Amino acid sequence: CGRLPSSPAKCLDLHAYIMVDASRSMHFAGLEGKRPQLARDTTKLDYAKALAASMAYLLVKQYDRVGVGVCTDHLVDHAPIAGSWSHLQRVCAMLEAAQPGTGEGDIAAGLAEAHRIVARRGQRGGMLMLISDLLDEPATLFDALSRFRHDHFDVMVFQVLTRQELNLSSLEGARLKMIDPETRGSVTTQVDAVRQEYQQAINQHIATIRSACRAHRIDHTLVTTDQPIPVALRTCLAQRAAVMR
Image (cartoon, rainbow, N blue to C red):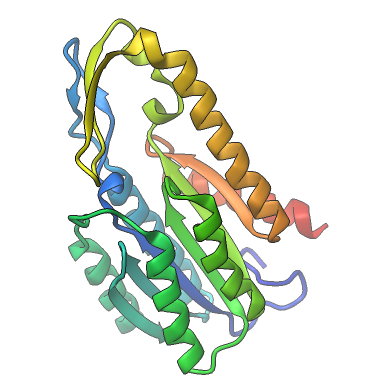
């Protein structure tokens, strides 16, 4: 059907919710220069907003209905589900206006709030798409996502990271003051001294996320901010098509 299906057979009247993580950790685009400073390239939040808008466009184009939420440690903004072109314009304006949060992120709390709204409206079944760096405690995150799975939602997760978060090799030899964007705690270190331990930690975290997604029957797609949006969407669709065969 050339779409984001909730089942291999049906291609009609899909109800989809897209949740965008706007916590402070999403306001990161990587580092640049011999004395590394924050890059001015696309942040994870910018990428997430563009990806959400692209998915919303595809859904409306194929006559489906879409709702969009922006969350930090709560639901910051929300566009109820609808399927008109004017609704898509409102969604895109809401996404464009979304700014990173100011405190500690808690995407699970934002998802729980969104689930309560959906439950009050009697919506059972459909699709939930979460776009986040997933730099959260996996147990609480998947507790929130499992509520949607319990209500028969097909759940898709896009994990958005910068290339440097996956691999520190481009910062070889650099001395960094590393600041937690949410707690503001900091530590100064040499990249070479922590690179191996960091690599093990990020690889383990991603493996934990993937394993939990499989256990909860959730689709997981890892994308980086230097990856074109169409490529990210094609990767997701290819993975879903392979599962449905």
